[in-house]
Amino acid sequence: MDKTFLMVKPDGVQRGLIGEIVKRFEMKGFQLIAAKLLIVSQEQAEFHYAEHREKPFYGELVDFITSGPVFAMVWQGDDIVTLSRMMMGKTKAVDAVPGTIRGDFSIHTGMNLIHGSDSPEAAEREIGNFFRPEELVTYERANSRWI
Image (cartoon, rainbow, N blue to C red):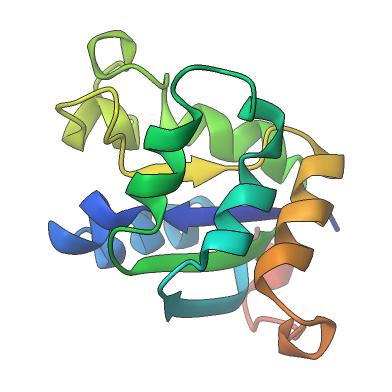
C-alpha cells in the first residue's frame, strides 16, 4: 500500500479547515495512519524545503511554515501520491479548479493551505522528517474490502 505525507499549513489550521481536509481524504477511501498538530522547527522546515534553498522565495517558505501550528499526516492507499495531489489542486490559487481543496478554499498563492508529497521518494523523506516509525499505525478498516 502506498503512503504519502500531507500537511495542513498554518493558514489552513488558522482558518479551521483541518476537519474538511481530513474528511475529503477519508471520503475518497484513503486511510489515515498518523497525525499530529505541531509547530514546525527551523531545522524541520529547512530540511522540508531543502530543494528550494537557492530560490529567492526560500526564506518566505521557511518563515511561513514555522509561523504557526500545522497538522501533519500520513495517509495510505493505492496511487495515493498522484491522487492526493489531484485532490489538492494546482499550487496557485488562480489555477486551482473548483472541487479541489485549493480550488474551493485557497485565496492566495503563498498561502495555499496544504502540502502533499510529489513522489513516493519525497513521501518517505517527508514522513521521516515529521514522524518516528512507531508513530505510524497500520490497521485494517472494517470497510476496506469495499474500497
